[in-house]
Length: 114
Picture 1 (tube, rainbow, N blue to C red):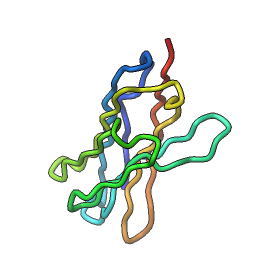
Picture 2 (picture 1 turned 135 degrees about the vertical axis):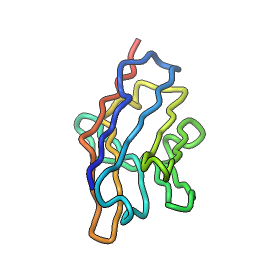
Picture 3 (picture 1 turned 90 degrees about the vertical axis):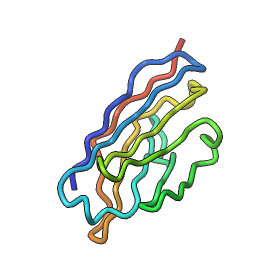
């Protein structure tokens, strides 16, 4: 499974972005898809997960501000990020969990700054 993430950028506090992650390869084997992030000097943390059936789970710091969605026909997962804060600045990685293990995309940088 290959994952290609896009949509990051520089945004002012309070702004929004939409991150996308397209999967290719053995996509039929994907169970869950999700987003994690890693800020400088910090460990990677869960942002949001979505199952193949559409059930979602969010990290506490993003609940109510971020929304994960998935287009199974396009093998793509999205992350709508709203009400961004400077502490949301990080590299955002998409993930896909399969029976063979978890695959990771290359990361897309989100910088929240005025």
